[in-house]
Image (cartoon, rainbow, N blue to C red; front, side, top):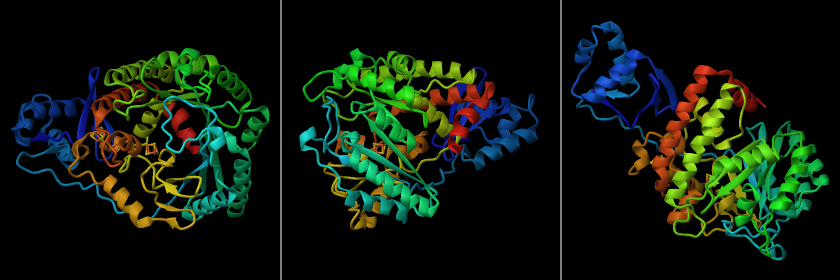
Length: 474
Ligand code: SF4
Ligand code: SF4
């Protein structure tokens, strides 16, 4: 009997073990019989069901052992020796693009000049190319027609710095709200800002329209000012922290998050978390480790990335302690993994780019996501001519096809699904290349998440209803 490691993954815990059923992303806690059967099979693949039953006969009823083995064979966790693995193709045919979100690049200009900025269409403030209302209105129309089956739709304002084109944002909000009201739908607005242009009046406006807001801030002054600079080269911590305090003190409609970019020389995630959560008061903090640009000055080295994930595990320890007491420390990366595991999420594609989400550049071109606007990857149609369905379909079908890749047998394939297209685009010049450069760290991170999940589930399962299910419902 063969334990099929492409379909099942064991995560040992103190005195017990969790089994990740890879095809469905379901998690099972193994009982004593389950652990014994899998231990025997892993030690000796020549054992068949009869011999496993005989080996365990002094402790377990033969019927129970037989029933379990049958169940594990049905789940494709076990396979009689000599039988080949059934082929589970990951091929998908994409026929519809039920958009739920559009990202509008309202201005390519930004008033900062962060050292690590990846935006290929970024301009200094005076040269910023602004989206006109005609392009924005067509984008909103496309969202409503492609997303007609959905009750909630999302519009994300992006840049450059989105606050540098507030007149357009206000026009789009009015237009989209009027359309949504007429159709009985809800539109959620959101944006990520460097915060420098925030005012009391703007905070009140965003609050009134229930914007989801995130602030790009990298941590305490010494960390933030390494990279987040004005066009003239000065650190921006002081103004960003002041504006963030103003925002956090007044904003009521939604929790406000901080977005941290981790680049070369920045691995101190615990100190960053402490500063942003406890000193400034952000509700949640999400970390984006830059792994993509091998050899580029700002990419984390392999050692640094390992250090970052070790820090994530320590932050995860704090998350676990708080979760057992019913609280959420706001560590977004781990909370997202808890959500994926709790909901048994099964990804065929790494993200919604191109399916649920498209990004519109200032001229109306349709891009996979906000990171691709201005890149050399050809666009997938325009708001004027519509989605280039054949090309986009072919792109997505190729992304979903795992044949010939390591992902085909990877046990986290339905959680990772090959990694971010943009990281691969930057690192390998091919958005379909898989993000192989940190697979081991990702697998270890998922194992860590499964242990945290199992612990919370055993000791305070109400945490999930309070901090995951209630949020979904909202
Ligand atoms: S990119 Fe790596 S970690 Fe992700 S599914 Fe593929 S092989 Fe697994
Ligand atoms: S391609 Fe990458 S950056 Fe773009 S939405 Fe997907 S995961 Fe995010």
